[in-house]
Image (cartoon, rainbow, N blue to C red; front, side, top):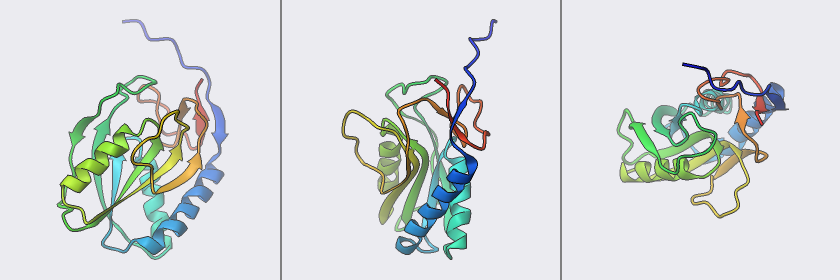
Length: 179
């Protein structure tokens, strides 16, 4: 089986040092509105890098949140959303009656975040907050818009810091464009 065309070389848009500053700022903004009983729920797989950094930054702000995950997918190995969400794994622990802070890497179409909010509300969360590292521009209103946004990203195909191209390049320490 022949490999697909190789991806172009990534162009750094946001270096690691700026990512760290954005995460620290988000933690300072979020800490006053949550408590240690809040469940930080990462959307897998891409949000894992951001969630790990943010929960550590929250700890430095005096907030030691609980942790859980939802495994959702809308892109597969493509550069655009398939327009539907697959749920691969639900929450691992009950969240009924708890405040939940949903964490994701990038807000693009809004489908994954909307599905995560729906699942979380149906599971009985007392409050649902949302936080994304990056928000891309979109021509139409998306619902729900995130409560917390770290970086207004350009409308480019992003990789690194959890964002991938066909499962690769997630581990880059910077956010890069691949277009």
